[in-house]
Length: 506
Ligand code: HEM
Image (tube, rainbow, N blue to C red; front, side, top):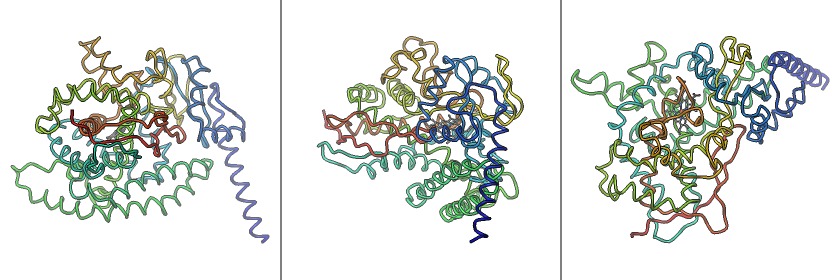
């Protein structure tokens, strides 16, 4: 018993000394603080951030009059937030050897432990997003559409024309993930429920692990992180290997036997086998984990955006006819699927605007444009941040600012369509996959999301197919599904029920 108490005492002492040490490091940032700044009281603000990040960021945004820098305490660090175009321009102008997006993300996700050192020291797979998943998307369209139609029929089974009150969250998430997976890993894996479950469990494990490790003061994080890596991350690596090792081996063989004049398969495993540097990275287990990482980047936001768009449509069913008319005048009535191509889909400008407006209101969390300072970073107003500081812009506040968007809190499905009509010369400026200082869902500058064109194609194909075949509405007396907030991340409601019926022929 005495031994037990002594151990407990040593652990509490170690924890307290680590917190004090961390506190000393944190004091170096001289900016207005939101919440408490004290040694222990700042923990209270960090705790409040778990449930009330949106209002804390809003408090900061107003405190600096929408133009300045403020800081919010997280468990293990200060989080610096920039508001105002001038500060955003400074971040955008910095090279990624000074402000790094990937280092920022890895720091918050505790990537060294939740993903593993091998995968943060070499990010070769990012080249795939910038090349294969951005160019020539037309060549991916036939496969993608095949999965859209197949998965929709399976996940949204044929119903009569009467209304049903349904929780569509899981079906829509599965639909989006399956369609992306058809391109990423092909048949039959994209339809394997266990494979999808492994991906979801991994994503949860990364988020949970990151929160758990951050809860400990930094001097203790490497101990907790290494334990987490050993017991959780490794288990997920083994699980994914079970599902994909055969597909990787088959593809490896196929590529080896390919005649020089034959074209290579157009999917993720082949791209990875093509790009992986020699040695450890070419091993099946490493390729398998890269697949897990790709799904982690690709699936969550894309499926969330589709769910939010369907909720917006249910809340504003008056748009259904307008969108259908546009789609049918460009793509046909929904039976002539061979008329679908990306150029034609791009001409559906009202649809593009509707999706972008839904992302504006629901698709960005409390922050966006996350960066880590790798050296001292000086803003143009002279403020200097020390190396290691995490910086971001306030996402939701910028998207909901009346100065940026008139009537900013109101959903206007044609907002960006109207802007495009007003500025016909700026053809790409207001499209879904574009971004600027006031639309931060895909980030800004050189690190802007390289998967956004792919995500936009997946969202549009799914959404068009749903609009052509289903009606959506809200049950009388219920309001639009409310987003769920998990720390600074906003997610579409996972429990809301909306009315769905098979489209009634005109
Ligand atoms: C609606 C869907 C998506 C949203 C809202 C989204 C959002 C973002 C954001 C905000 C960033 C950070 C950019 C910055 O800070 O400047 C980012 C980066 C990234 N996204 Fe996406 N993303 C989406 C879909 C995808 C998809 C489908 C993929 C892959 C297939 C992907 C892969 C990536 C990668 C690899 C990065 C890191 C880029 C780098 O380090 O340079 N994303 N995304």
